Image 1 (cartoon, helix red, strand yellow):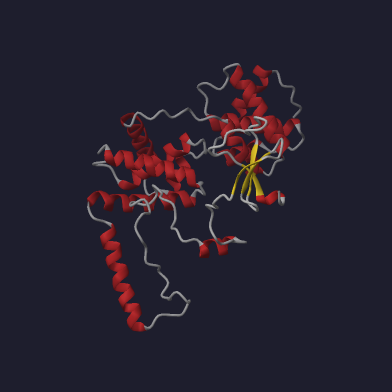
Image 2: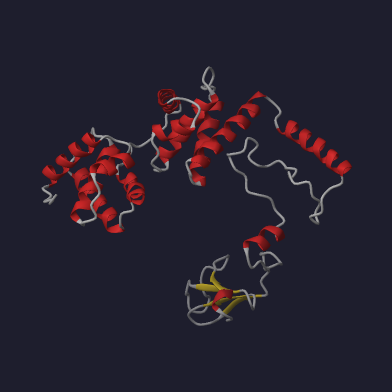
Length: 313
């Protein structure tokens, strides 16, 4: 049946073997046959290959040989469905364009930008989504968070709830809401540091959008901060596992309600570092968690007392 790379599990119209009733079927790409894994009966032959007629051995070849464009995305105002004229002044063979041809391409590029934005809504989206992408890049956020943030902003535009509010403020609020929904811990202070608005305005816009769009955003879980703080403090994976175990016990007895998640995460990491002899000071942990030493100390005392943890300082 060919090598292991040329065989994969496959189910089409044929659900089971007509001979033995087995439902585990494979498709042999080398012989273009569907075969029963139990008795070896050939159930269908001369299948049509619906894959590409070319092969690619690396990402560069894949990009060059593919004949379709990028997938649609909400992070571009027209969802990436329109064409783009490349910014490089080169032809298909990589040769530089003549000055006359360069001037012509410049004019085409300028008109291309104009026709992509047809009304005020698209102009607003073009500005806002580029600002969203800038902030997400600064915060090193993954693609799914950018898509969710763009979708939230689009819903806000369609609901006409952004009138009278700055584009930057609504973008920052949408990005914060997306981080909360995707459980990617980013604080208002971190977003305000790279946005062009203050923390107070971001929080006000976030609460307004969440109320108007009826968004069901879960509360921030302190466990979400642990891996990030542990990485910044250069602690081991054992400290991370122990800190998460401490926080889960605290959640079980209801010790986390009404307390800041970053302070709880910092205190659990401090306890775990002491237990596993990878000591970090309260000041070091507080600086990474962006909380005060007093907060770390208070949360530390509560966790040690309530969970009956024996810590040797």
